Image 1 (cartoon, rainbow, N blue to C red):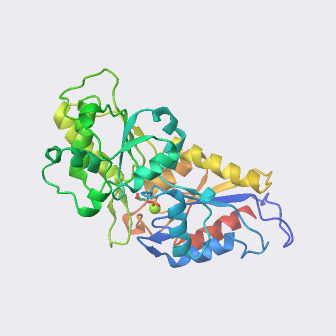
Image 2 (tube, rainbow, N blue to C red):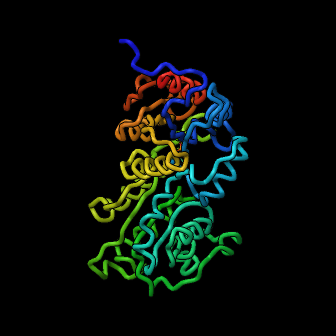
Length: 340
Ligand code: G3P
Ligand code: MG
């Protein structure tokens, strides 16, 4: 089939293309950058035949700190400046619903100590508590963990017998699954007031998870459990307690909400660049269940790299990408070749 693509001349604009990069298993593993990442990002930052920048965003199920802080860390790790308007993490989308809970106490789980309390307050929540605050209020809530001095210093004092928690938001991976499963069940089964026995009100507590990943790559030789594994552990205990599955809202890749949110961010980026052409979006990811599944469902092009969760020796991935590449640099070069 004769290529219908316009033959480009070196002086022409780059093709209408933009990228969404997953982070863990594509750009970094644990704290270390993947060697091909710097090359891939430098191509998009202008080291290409047009000498022009090509738009991209980072779209991760990671999180645990504020967006600005993560971009600062990533810029240092990757040796490339990552502006915060290019960065979407698991719980960034929660900013869009925080105002609904502004006047109500909420529980925010995951991350270290009270780092995510400040992130949640920055999103618009005004009464943010975590499971360490609950343990500090009454150590009998979970008698198998003594607060460390660092945890004690992060506590926000409250009498939870007098609070009605309206929502539980699992922003990032809980550090103490046992404590967090216990506190989640206490809040949900009491209708929001810990220790009040069974539900004292008809309005159920909202439960929101931000990352469905069962596993992620990190820098261990085999993948590690992600927030999706915590959710499944919580659901197993909840079902043993109640015989039912707890209703919840799921954000994060591959959910439609997260990809729609990411597409809007890409559109804003293109508008700011006065790019009027409708670009093809290429998602580069390492996890077929989140990166490839979500991109395919969103109508984006998808490229699966072999530097993270997916191992080609496992056979064909459950969610089939448009292309497979050994790493992110090869993925970028293939995509550009497709659009010329
Ligand atoms: O906790 C992060 C992990 O679940 C996946 O991160 O960057 O591969 O979406 P990422
Ligand atoms: Mg990944």
